[in-house]
Length: 335
Image 1 (cartoon, rainbow, N blue to C red):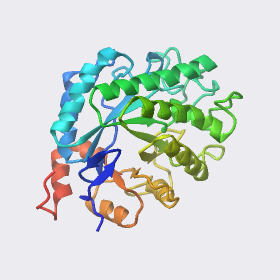
Image 2: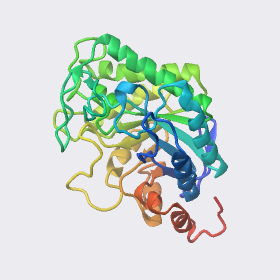
Image 3: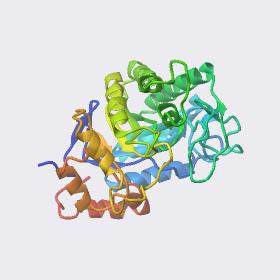
Image 4: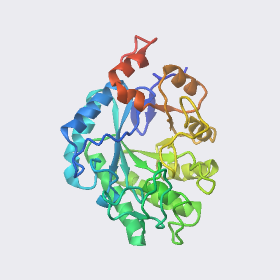
C-alpha cells in the first residue's frame, strides 16, 4: 500500500520516500550570488528532515533576473564550487538534491534589478504594486533561453540530481506563460502553444545537454479570470512532458505565492495537484500548500491527490523534530 515511506523511481533516481523539501528563499548568499558557509549549513540542516528530495532555493540565471540582494546565483561558472558544496551536504544526509532556476522577469524592485524586463512590458500583478518592466525584444527572449540552459549545465556539473524551472509565483517564465503578462505577437506569444514554446525549448536543450532529472514548478492555475486555467495547465503539462519533464511541481500563479482566500487548513493548493492527477499524465506530481501533519500526507497519498509531498515551513522550523514526527508510528523506518 502506498504511504509516505514508499520509494519512487524517477529519472533513473530512487527517492527513498515521498517527502520533498521545497525551494525556500533563505537570503544566505553573498551579494554576488555566491554560496556562503551559512548557505551550506542551511542545506545541511534542511537535509536532516529525512526527506527523499531536498530542493535548493530559486537561483538567478542571469544578472538581469535577480530578485533579492542575497539570492543564490547560477549565472556564471564561478558559482559551481559553492553549488557543489550544497549538493554534497544534501547527498551526505541520504537525500537526492534538486536545484531551482529562475529569472525574475518583471517581478523585482528597480534598486535590486535595474534592468527589469517582461515579455510584454506589463506590470506583474501583486499585492504591493511593482514597477512596469520594459518589453523584451526577441534577443532578450533568446538570452533568457540561453541563460537557463547554461545555468542547468552548471547544476549538472555541481553534481545535482534534478533541476527545476520556476514557471510559477509570477516570476519570469510564469510571465511568459500567462496571457495576463504575455501579449506578444511573435512565436513566443499569442496562442497557449506559443506561450509555452520558450519553456519547451529550454527543457529540450537541458535534456539533450545533461543527464539531470527535469522538474517544472507550474501554476495549477493563475486564479485570475483572464489568466491560465486548469484546462490550460493540463495542456501545458502535456507539452512539457513531451519535451522531457520528469516531475511536475504544482503551485500558485501570476499573482505570486498566496493562499486562496476561500481555502483553509493544510494542503491549500493540493486541489490543483489533484486536478492534474486526474488527467492521467503518468508523471509524478508534487502537491504543496501549508502541509504539516503525517495524517494529511497519508490521506492525500491514499486519495491519489499527489505523488510527492512538499513540506516547507514545518521543516524550516525544526528539520530534526519534523523527522521525528515523520517517523512516528513507524519506528522501524530509518531515513
